[in-house]
Amino acid sequence: GIQVEQSPPDLILQEGANSTLRCNFSDSVNNLQWFHQNPWGQLINLFYIPSGTKQNGRLSATTVATERYSLLYISSSQTTDSGVYFCAAAYGNNRLAFGKGNQVVVIP
Amino acid sequence: NAGVTQTPKFRILKIGQSMTLQCAQDMNHNYMYWYRQDPGMGLKLIYYSVGAGITDKGEVPNGYNVSRSTTEDFPLRLELAAPSQTSVYFCASSQQGNEKLFFGSGTQLSVL
Image (cartoon, rainbow over all chains, first blue to last red; front, top):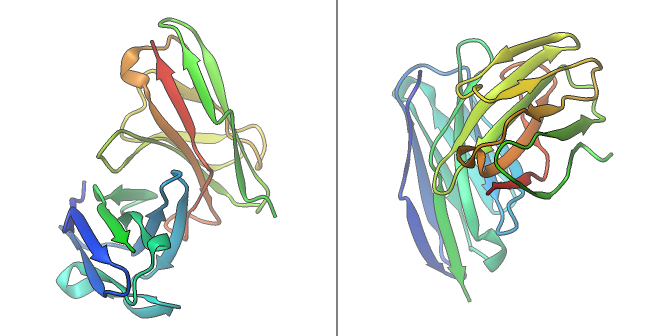
């Protein structure tokens, strides 16, 4: 199967700071999704982004499929951005490989 | 819309007991999935279904069974619970395969 690696594994941010999370994948993918798992465990789909760039408020994501990576940008971070961010790469027939996540803590 | 609904939210089982985790979605999605999440790890696919009456194994199917009698429901059955099945279980759905995935709120299961 495909390998998905996320970096950095852990990140501490001061409220208001910007950050970039990276997701590398080892092979061609059908699409790439980013999820946020909040401190209560709920998983929310942030982006469905097979290629190109999308924006959603203070968050944006870019996938460069030909170079096998995706980036998630958090601007003007808030405490509610804390949690774990997962990327998941779709490959083959109905397979989705998850990375181990980026643990983000935003301190006031 | 409720989206994807999972019950129960928490459960403690003794070794060897059985239980069924319930999952229902009201988005008329064709695809449904069961994942487990272990501490510090990503999600691993247990089973998935592409439509009513059709199921298939994922990466970690041993010790589990599923059925899909309707489009809406996709229960996960643990027949003989083992400590290795202590985990958080997530049900998810998508309209088609490899499309945007929506998760339920999870079930935290402990096997003691």
